[in-house]
Length: 452
Image 1: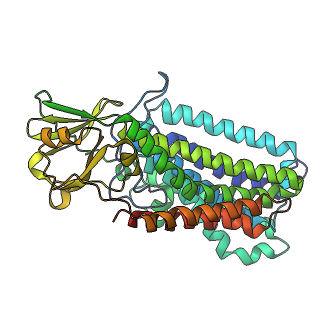
Image 2: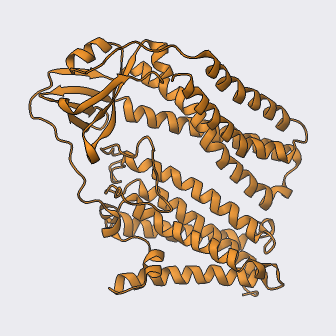
Image 3: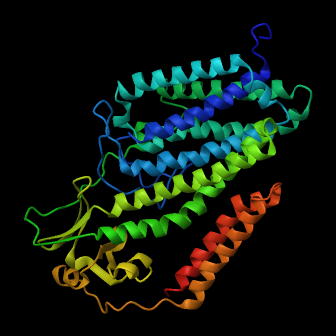
């Protein structure tokens, strides 16, 4: 291996890059998974309470690719957190074993990366797309196998961490990486070829098609008669609401991701940059994460609610999605209860629109629904026979509102001042990346009290 320049350091970093790329590739592949995941699924790659997770329909971007399902978007973007978490943990664990900067300067490493990436891309095209594997899988089934490999790798490194500090630490780390890869490949083969396998082998191989795809996805019942009433979501209010909602959400979700990426860069290649260069990189990570996160959050909210047209068909209310040309949900009028004006929507107050929140269904089939926002709430009440007690909106309580706005704003100003200095302290940066999102979360809780 030494004669071929395949040193242990190169192989270790190569295996890590391959695993991270497989996670990234799985995120892209999950966009095309045709089956929705089962409601009972709960594991490493599960997404909950995401804006688009229950959205029906699909969109074809280009003719030579299968359709993309909006419900899979939270899974695809959610894998970013797994990638950065795994990259950070492995970087910290293996920082005493290898010198990443020296490895990254060797052409043989990049040649191997290109070969690995090309091979996995070719396999994806031939197996996943040409053989239409996406038709049989859910996003959960696509993302779980590489996520479980990463989890097993971290656990083994934790258990055998003491050996990494010895003189043969690089050999130990390489042995663990190779063992996980061989064991994972063997588990997949063994599950495919045998009907009797251990629980660990089945877990490591990942969920199969029958374990992930919900082939019994219920259809939305829609009466055949034409709508007797139509109310479209007010576009201006939906857009404004998406902006108001996306800014704190982006700060809360994306700053920790930017912080993990920043730590990985600091540990691996930080010494290759001057203080000014790394400060510019830090600023780029912060702005990039914020802008990207805001666009994703705002876009997801608008796609979910901007195209909804609420229709009355016979004795049912149908939420028809004009973007995807498919009904998202429907409910009988006599099952609608607990209807009230959603007072916690700031955008509604700016545009004089109203959104009605309600509960539909009974027992295990009940669900929280909304109709709106609409600029003509009286018509909505009349056309859909909504049992609303009052349409009056309670005023915002100024005390909690001022606290909720001032606390994060002051924390933001102070932190930005601290990190914009010529030599920003590590504590200030860590506070901004990992503590400031908690301040945002607490402020959101206080803000909700302003409406109660």
